[in-house]
Length: 191
DNA sequence: CGTGTTTGACCTGCGC
DNA sequence: GCGCAGGTCAAACACG
Image (tube, rainbow, N blue to C red; front, side, top):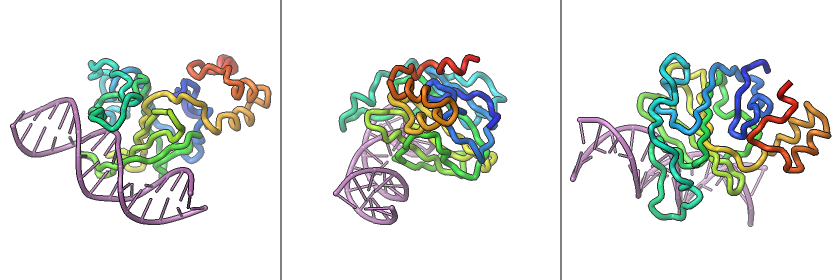
C-alpha cells in the first residue's frame, strides 16, 4: 500500500502491520496524552487541533486497578492510561480491518448524531489494555473511523510474519527475542 | 469445552 | 438534582 506512515499503538509504523489492502486510508490522527473530543467532527482534519479539549491530564492506571467496584470509565477519559490514541479513517466496506492483533468485542452503542452504531473492542491478549472503537463516519458511511487507545504490551501475533515477509528471518530473530523496543521503529525504517 | 459475540443493564460525567 | 449520552459489564448465546 502507498498510504501515509501511520504510527500504530505499538509505536511502529502502522502500515507495516495492518493489512490495508482493500482499504483507502484517508486520514489519521495521533492523539497523544489527550482526548480526541469530538473525534468524528475532526478526523477530516479541517478543524482545530485535535488535542484541544484535552485539558484533562492523564488519568491513573485505573483499568489495571479495577476489580468489580465503582471504577468505571469516564466519558472522554483515557482509562488505559497509556496516553496514546490513534484515530484514522479508512474507506472500506468492512468495519474491522485486520491489524494483526486479536480483538474481542465488548460493547456496541448507538451514538447521538450518528446513524451508525459504535463498536468497542479490547485486545484479547491477556493483560493488554488496548482498546479500539470502530464506527462508520456519520457523514459518509463508506468511511470507517477507527480509534486505538493505549499501547500494546505485547507484539502483534502477525508481526513476526510481516517482518519475515519483508525483512527476512534475521529480523524475526530480533523481534522474537524481545530485544526490540516497541516504542521505537526498527532501525530499518530509518532509511 | 473454549472462545468470541450479542445485548440489556448499569455506572459516571456533564450540561441545564 | 435530573436527564442525557457515552462507555463498560456480564449473562446468555453461538460457533468451531
